[in-house]
Amino acid sequence: MLIFAIDDEKNSLEDMSNILSKAVDGKAEISKFTHCEDALLAISEGSLPDVVFADIVMPGISGLEFAVRLKERSPGTRIIFVTAYEEYALEAFKIKAHGYLMKPLGVEDVREELAAFPEIRKEEEDKLVVKCFGHFDVFWKGRPVIFSRKQSKELFAYLIDRYGAACTSGEIASALWKEEGDASAERNRIRVLVNDLRNTLKAIDMEKVLIREHRELAVRRELIDCDYYRMIEGDMDAVNSYRGDYMSEYSWAELTNANLYFRK
Image (tube, rainbow, N blue to C red):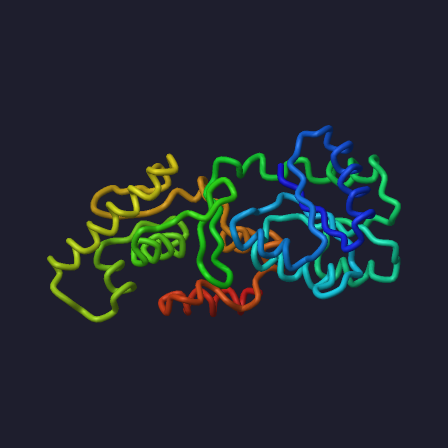
């Protein structure tokens, strides 16, 4: 488990870190930050925390603003506010915070909050984490998956968009390239991308995510932790993390984005 602790006061941050360490009996990695900006940078570099304990009143980006940005970047992360101010509770829960603790923080307070969601990432540990809201990104064990070809990544994005439904080479070609070309050349082009995608996934021992049968291609949804999938399945954290952008770099994703917009 990875826990972020954020407080602009160094003494408070040390106290929070010590309490968190005792509450989890040392069975978690705790990263400390005095500024929300630094925590967001760590997340953008692939460190996806399971839980964040954050103060609310801080210079620069406040805890409340951080929570909004966090949901955009790591919708599966839980956030618990630790503050000396009661008046922010209503606003905190409006943005779907998972907890609100008053200072001074106690070990039992933390344990009670964590006990409310004991399943944190246990089921997702062996899944690819796929972020569709905003830009499309893929993570494995908290680190970004690097695709050697941009179109291999786009192919995977298209398969994710299909929600596990199988697609033909013709459907892939129509989505990725729009203009009609030589069918044989397109099949060869797709074959190269599929092999490249398979090698990328094989490097992290997740080649089994891909299904290729009867010249059709699909993904195994059960091996993927995806904000788009969770929104469709009614997960309120995913619903609230959607801000009207879905795979914004791909024009073929606009139809799905419209459907999500009206669904919300």
